[in-house]
Length: 263
Image (cartoon, rainbow, N blue to C red):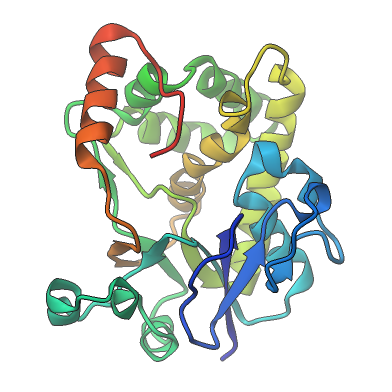
């Protein structure tokens, strides 16, 4: 079993030492630095779309250029965590909490898909949270695209939008043929989305909407195809500023001030 998990990164950063992980430098096609990682502008690639697609240029590279049996995507500072609760609770080094290849392969021996535990909003639906923090029109246009060209996905899209939880972050590990199917669907949808919406009058942060919308498409694809999956916790290699995240969310929900930067 060969497993290749892309670690999307735009900066030099510490990486887990395990053969299943492949750091991929994002946006290499429009940048000039070299961190010594695999670059997303080699072979069949969409590196130039990185300002809009974010970590998806690493996923596209892996999809098109790797022949691994299982493929996945994580982020330089956001990883799947081990199921070992003792390690997660008591290890001082955050990198030791990242799941290792041996544990991943054990899980994959019984499941085709590994996902991060769902993100719960409780007081917001997926649609209302996105509309308060970004531009809800982007989801409306996405639904129009599905209705026109991918009709079987519309019921699942409506279900996900009305839910208060979802698998987010563009993180997964899947059997290769499932990655083929998901990427065919997801990249087709966001490609049409950018044709409809474009980037006029959007700043650099707002222009990353294709990557954000793609996060909301994973559960749509899963539900439509009725795929089973295993879940792992999410581990951040950096402290999370929950105060900033919380106050920004309140301003977005009550004051109509959408997000203007990542956390």
